[in-house]
Amino acid sequence: MAEVKTQEFVAASGAAMQNPTLRRALRQVGTGFNGARLEAIDEVGPQLWEEWREEAQRIKRHTIDHLDYYLEMLHDNVTKAGGQVHFARDAAEANGIVAELARTRQVKLATKSKSMVSEELDLNQALEGIGVEVFETDLGEYIIQLAGETPSHLVAPALHKTKEQVAELFNDQLGVPLTDDIEEMARTAREALRQKFLQADLGISGANFLVAETGTLVIITNEGNGRLCTSAPRLHIGITGMEKVIPSVQDLALFLRLLPRSATGQRLTSYVSMVSGPRRSDDEDGPEEFHLVLVDNGRSKLLADPDLRESLYCIRCGACLNICPVYQKIGGHAYGWVYPGPIGAIVSPTLVGLKQAKDLPQASSLCGACREACPVKINIPRMLLHLRHKLAESQDPEEKSTSAMDSLAARGYTWLMNNPSALTALGKLGRAAQQPLAGKGKIEKLPLPLVSQWTKTRDLPLLPQRTFREIWAQELGQAGSSIASPTSRDTESRDAGSGG
Ligand code: SF4
Image (cartoon, rainbow, N blue to C red; front, side, top):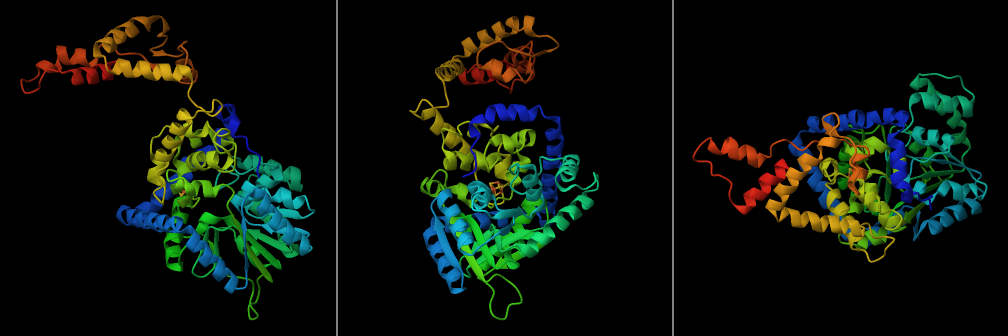
């Protein structure tokens, strides 16, 4: 399995925020991908878009609730089409199946189209371990393979790299002159990969969807590399998570409308490739053998948990990453494992272990933007809160996310909110105490436990000179007899809260 660095999230995200080149590269996330998504939704019309999302969620919920039934249907139909299905419990088993197929077919060179599951399994390393050369053929994946890095985004793996960095990489690794022309760089990659497509014995692909009723593997790409990987070599192995199954071709039509629009704002990707078994006698091309490896690797745990099962509806469009204010600041590598962003903060803790990834569910402002953007209407904030609750209640001291100090602070806050006169008194005390710290109209650093972590990188506004309750009593309360003076305990508490 891919190396897990989720424990380093706090340090890695801090370092990412201090990296100006990364911040520059990440600018396109919000304005580029997210902007294009919003334009695509405008074109469809918000009402119809909403109907599509509802329907997509209904299909995914139904399929995941009957996953055993649809996996069996998929298995039968892939087999009928002449392919072979393998079920893998974990990364070791999945890598073992692929390695054994490669070994027994004397594979020397493999081309691979983009597959996040293969990243999760660290499949390249497993194949290289038995002497198979593996070439990534998606341009973004090719770039990060040359750089010896991992993907930082579900859809755009090399999003963290600027074009200048890619130019230097190509210059260094491929010996081509430096250029700032992106088309020129794409041409370089195409030429480097062309021979590999022709030489490969094995083509490996992921799957965006698996259609149960026809036993079809579907991949959508913009570069055509997926089609070459699945049709040119004599052996094709599709490898993907078991949650990618959908019931029918009719359902596929809906997801083909939703996924590209949510990912890149496109109406349809340039290539939609559908593979149903190996080549038939009258086919012009295609592999002699087709194998489908369906990977569990912790997904059963998500399936068994009614609070997290919804995360299996994910179609990996990346829209929640693109809109997330946290992802936009730190990028994908800081999350420390294959799946970054809001959806990664849910699936990674379950797949790699809650103890190792306990900081990820905290990496959210719970603004709800991810839920709004998700084409399958996955309620990400609810699941983040669920994981936070689990961590706070954990009896394992290494897993528990809250300290005795946090509990004390929460109890103190509850008491304060229930005692308006104490809150008023504290407000007065705070206004007096803030004067020496006030600096230039804001509090820059507050030397208190817990709060100092927050003010280390953020400014606190000063408490206002008059609270809302004082303004009300002095001015607004006299504005008309129809407006009652706030004398009740409830109102007093609210007013004091808003004014500090
Ligand atoms: S959770 Fe939703 S928005 Fe995020 S990647 Fe998955 S499908 Fe896309």
